[in-house]
Length: 239
Image (cartoon, rainbow, N blue to C red):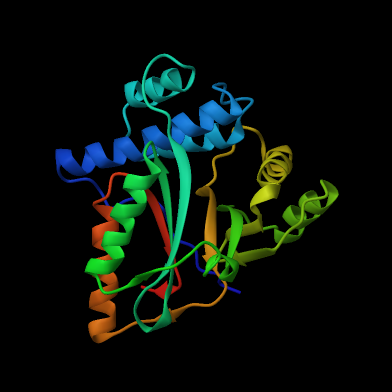
């Protein structure tokens, strides 16, 4: 079926500013995950996945440890999630996922990004219903049927499963993340490493852009990427 998902890993950091931005984004995500689900990665699977991904992206251990420490009330900020919805050129759809300690500031900053790129920020519910909030697991394997059987036996609601060239991709609703990951670990082993282990918004329909529309959309992405509160941008554009 070839459902497209976005690899959230940023391009390789070539400057200290880019590295600092990546560290900050991971730090915020780890902070929120540890605060809501507990600081122990063995008992908080989303935190464990974040830490694993941060290490793969060469985030220093002290950045990870500091974020977990802050989540337990040892000084620091209090970040909360925010999701903004809007339209890019040619009716393309955009979701902007943020972690913020000042929602009014973040809303104003995100709105400016849309305005400067001649795009339109919408109200809650404008495009959210046209995305699937999905847990995604991608890993090397060749027995799609065994994977599906393991998930079904664990009563996991599987949205889709694909096997392409020895790489299996599993899609489930985001609410099934913990149950699905536990079932896959039971099948593959608890030390098994996934190539992708994330929760994302997947556009139900996508289309390419060209010419001025593409330039306009790329400007929007650049502006949003420069905003420290923006964690992820999901969209319906085929890049």
